[in-house]
Length: 374
Image (tube, rainbow, N blue to C red; front, side):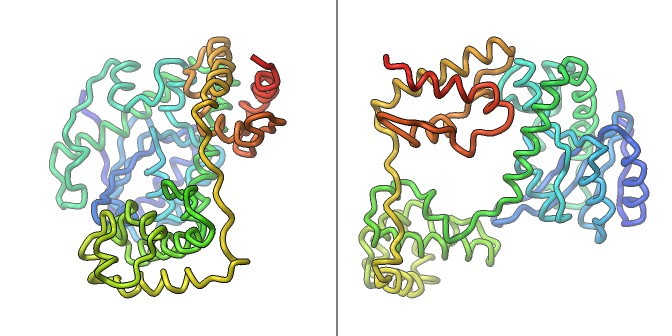
């Protein structure tokens, strides 16, 4: 069946449609973007589905996003997306706003125990028994005009996403629907929380092995890398490869020859930024001791796997009781954060990252499981 498609190519048309969409209970949203050589995604197409028509908004033609931002922020209209972390980044970059309330169909599949982390095509096949065309996800969405296949692909995404929502919604209890929106709000909150460049060193692999003075160097290098990636609008690894950060902080080369020998160091980086990196290393190594970062906590030892297994069992029992995907109940990062609050002998406390219905339903059970001596 042919999908009714409407192009949106000017500000006035978009504003008029946004007024209409704000009268609806929901809209389905999707984006196509390019991010090959840039830090930030370049919006190439926005799709809106209302169940009757697929609207294709050309961001290369739109200059005023205020009406669309108003739609995104309208609490009366549920915004339906699928596996939306990158879409959220596109919306925030383009409009300054994020979609609330947010219903992610990938999460809904997990709450209905259809599957965890299901791809869009597979979920559409499973729920709607429709096979989507393949092959356009990697195409050039910034080209104009778009090919017929690209237009069809984009329109089908918007149309079937709306149909997915209409098919999944009746199967969800009020409680599970609320949990999906709660998780959606968490995704939005995480997107608003921009990483502080000065804290980027904490995420570098093996950083916990470094001494405080070396960590001061790592902090300076990771901060510079993050700041420059944003400023130049280049991928972080184009500025300085991640695998080079730890050996740079550990060995602290003092000249360009030594710098060039660092693991995974790109010759282009040495040519363009070598002197800057050497100066950063010198300055950071001279940081007064009282300003050195504290040693980072070690990863949990292998022996902790027994306790992790006990905690996962709590989640698996809850998943069976609630009939939801087990992976959705307790995330590994949360369980590890819980163990780190008191390993090996306790007492333990629930980490701040453990929130909402999971904390209410499972918090005490997790603490009880840790108190029981095996």
